[in-house]
Amino acid sequence: MEHECIYCGQIFEHRHKGKKICPDCERAVKHGLGYLVRVDTPEDTDAYQRSIRQKNIEAYQDTIVAEGYADRQMARTLERAGKIKTTL
Image 1: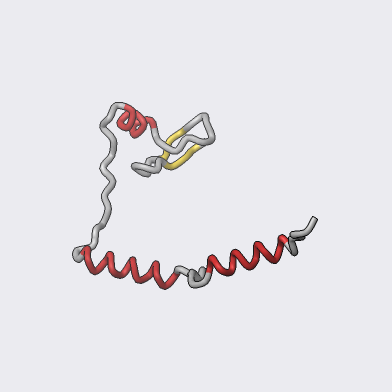
Image 2 (image 1 turned 90 degrees about the vertical axis):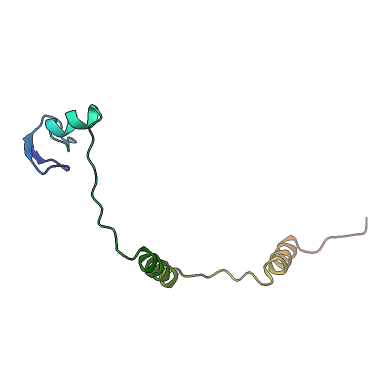
């Protein structure tokens, strides 16, 4: 079976179905050479962070209403418990 290496893209033969790294890359990773992952960073990080924050705020659906929460919980609990007999 042939697979493509997730690091270098080289096609390699393997005996195990779950193998995703070619032998050369596996040797490099095991011996601590590793691979530097290149990440394209934005030039204006403040503007980038503001845009990400704004996008997350828009995507977040806040449905919790905090005002009066304790009163609603107490009323709900008393409603479930029903009347308590105070006489013997």
